[in-house]
Image 1: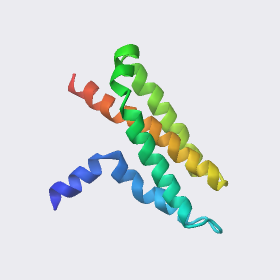
Image 2: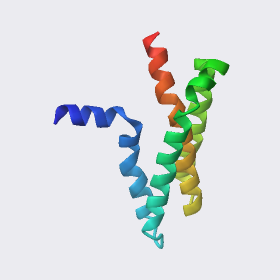
Image 3: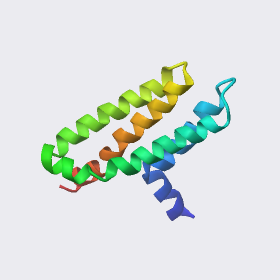
Image 4: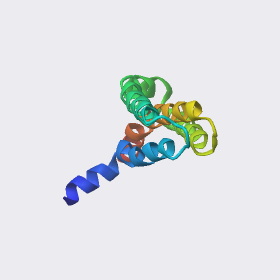
Length: 113
């Protein structure tokens, strides 16, 4: 049980899952499927963003990639937190996924160095 809890907390997908679902379910008049679209957008961009991450790090360097992706993730988090439009919340979760997809592996490489 402890190992499962620790591994879930170590992954950004696990940390972002519950707030993502709540952020769209609490908006009055929002269809139930909208939370699923945001979840899919976040998960897809996390997966797709990790594919070229190593090549981009080799090309630009670890620190530049970490700064850029962290800025993209921060913009996505701000959009999700403060926008009144549901479609923009989905775009915000998408940007958060793009940003975090490169931050997590790059951060671990920099910490190991």
